[in-house]
Picture 1: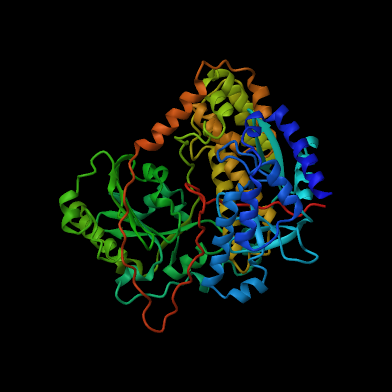
Picture 2: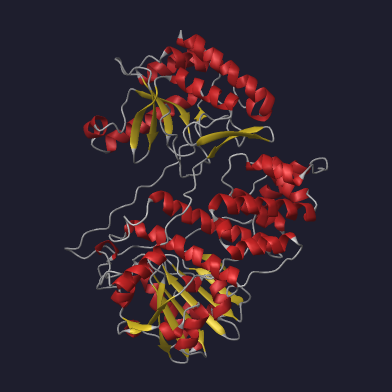
Length: 632
């Protein structure tokens, strides 16, 4: 019988947990009360399959928390008291849409019963419709629907989990890992061994005369001008960066571009280049004694702290970044932020002298921002403050004619300042990083860096291999942007950005595969993490970011073996958790300003609304969830 199979499989899972993950074993709850199971069946109007009843009779789900038991990924078995609210939320949503079409298309059916949850609305369900599919297990994902074919029933799922644990094998691309008394599932994907370079392909296309990039930007990026918003209404997002006392050629150099290769481009020509599969692009001009750069990027270079330090060397720099809903403003003197703030968060302005322009900002309706005004009105208001306070003579008309334009490599990112390892989620790993002898820790991290380089293909770059050898000999140094290694890492970042942008480019979409795009993204993340470990920054912070980039599922055990035993004082983990909690609660919640949005003029289409991930669990955080693929 299937219910007997369920008991056997749960027994095998519990035996493994008792040996390898005792804390996770402790999160499995006692049996559910039969009366509660029957009440859930009545509320939903179905009869639960025998194996779901048997599973609830063994464990009424798992207790919430970072050590909670999970099935094949991040699906946590649900308490019977959670089943009806989850089912009702999914079923009630049918009433807000085309109910019959959603049922017919397989998005949701009122006789599908959830039994395992994630921290978003994604969940595992069991089919309780009478007929041949009764008892089948499916995966429900918001925006994608419900898919069956993974497991014939819950007993088969539990068999897969027990087998994966005992044989140390993955379920799809989820691999079980035990460390520090907890079970977790690591996503494991093969790294493409030799992803093609879109930058090389673009160069080859130019040599052969292929029209790259297209002569006009894709229609999907066009922003219909709003007649009431002035020149700002032509932009969905735009960044303006001003530097005092230098010319356009020097501004290009500080961005990392070659002024000798600059060409004159209109806004549309620059957008076409930006939207294609090549390096990022900026245009430059003059605003009185200030040189300015304009970028239409969602993540523009000229507003990054790393770039602003370069741009403001020996002078002043100002950056404005309009995102469509707010404007971020930064004033920097010779690398030191003087004012930093966002018009969405008027109480969170910081810097060495955040009140420097306060009277002018108040007069302009920016401190606090006028909640009745449209966000695009903040841009001319801020430019008016800059004109009055700093003499920046800028007007939107300066952006209309062709301007000197060049492509460039993004600068290296700053070292991380916060840990990537939470003591609440990974207590043993956090304690190892916090209490290990620093020299032993650095040696262990360099060993991990070599493994990461081999996993991601970075060991094919001689600059990085030489740097790891130098670090192993005891050197510590900050990798500079213009050094051979710095240029290599910046080039890898540009490759990753081009690969990501190629998803939306009609020419480049088919030139590389999705595994190649992911390979470039991993190379960028790995290269930047290795650079930070090489430098003088504290390895306790940078090391966690490097470890998180490892691809091998058992990297924790490898790190523990490289590091060796770490003596921990009594209460070490508890203190780390308490410190995290103090840090989390130290920064008060800052209310944002709700602003009106301009509606498209008559005759213009309204923008499509993006789907919003909802969280049903109290305190839940929406996450990108990857389901396990069907098992054989």
